[in-house]
Length: 224
Ligand SMILES: [Mg+2]
Image 1 (cartoon, rainbow, N blue to C red):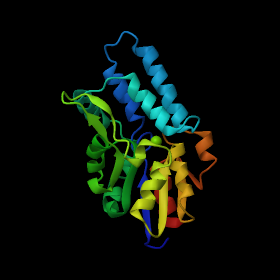
Image 2: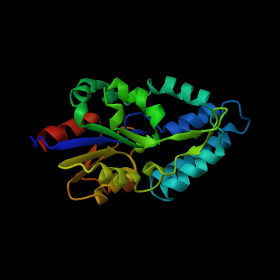
Image 3: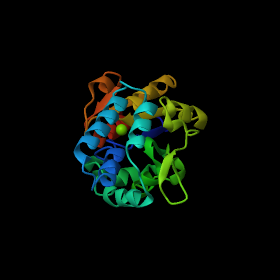
Image 4: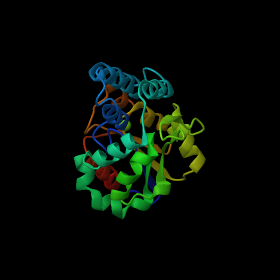
């Protein structure tokens, strides 16, 4: 059993939920677009390139946001479907997450307003959720994201962890390159590659531990 001085930082997209929220949001936005299939393929490709670290995260995100015109209604629709897309092993371990919620944080390159309703299901505090934030026009269209927010760029998760000045052990769980980057923070970080939804070779190679489900994460915390 490890000492009591640990915190757990969870990624959101393809970790707590089964897929990428911006891909899902793009599907909603492009629902009636005649080029929907081609445009979605392009967006998915940009997502993958960002997650695998082939292009910088900020380029991946900027190019995806430029491809679609998102409205507040689209985000509302996304929030309605996200609760049904939670990763099965997170649902199974909801009680454990609720019990340990004081130690649980979410760091995501996704969007805070779509993460909060899911975080609430696990009783993860809203002030433990760190993610990108949309900027809206007067008529409720997304015009971009807040660039002052560290999550809008590569290395954002490390930057935020440094700012929060956690002491003790950090256990970072995620499927993507931006999660693996957390190893750059200091020696107290254990990176767990989460592969229940997607297995990325380039990310697994950088991992201390590989978790096929959230059960493996709990085992690591309780026994390692
Ligand atoms: Mg992810």
